[in-house]
Amino acid sequence: MIALITFGSAVAVLCAAVGRRLGRRVFLVGMMAPAAAIVWLVSSGTSPGDVITQSIPWVPELGLSLDFRLDGLGMLMSVLIGAIGVLVFVYAWRYFGDRDGLGRFAAYLVFFETAMLGLVLADNLLLLFVFWELTSIMSYLLIGFDDERVAARTGALQALLVTGLGGLALLAGIVLLGQAGGTFSMSAMLAEPPGGTAAMVGLGLLLLGAFTKSAQFPFHFGLPGAMCAPTPVSAYLH
Image (tube, rainbow, N blue to C red; front, side, top):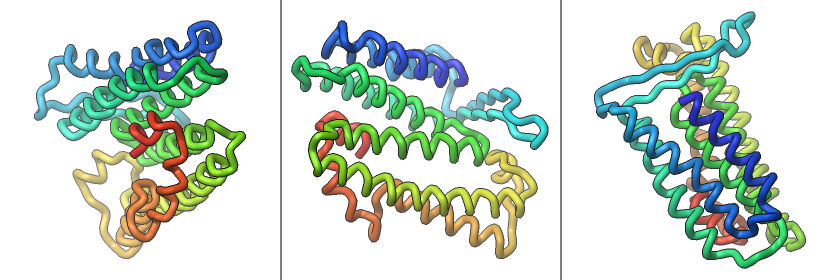
């Protein structure tokens, strides 16, 4: 899982480096990231009932680590991210003509795919928040890709503000849950759910953050502005 995140980041950097030379073919390079996720999931031999965990130290002084967990739900979401990602990159290859900035666009799209993978595989609430905010930043850059258009800049800024405020709510909820449960490990919290007012308020703030991220009512007003992005962006983001 950690290798998938690392590989996706490397592919994104590669897209930015070779985009000018390859033109729209850079999307075929970017497609390697979601394709690798599918290949890894299939070749891992993991069944829906299995659980795979990986962990490396992050900030040992604070007891924080990069914890990843692959279970049945994580596998389903990872396959969806990978499969839809492959289709989106193939579509982008045919959608765009030769124009400037395609390497940068492909890099943003790969970083977005990688952040989504990290989001569904994270087993630490603070790590989940990091990937959550990375998806918000990449959404802003993708929606505002045609930055010479006022509509693109406005839609990107609106999306960033809504998801950014939701991210603050999410962070506050994470802190409350971590204090209530004595840990930021998601699997540990599920094994022994924290109780009390702080935990309930924390869960409410997590739901608020999720509502803003998924543009649920009453935070759906930014969707029309986000649709001004190139079609492959709308296909993957929404």
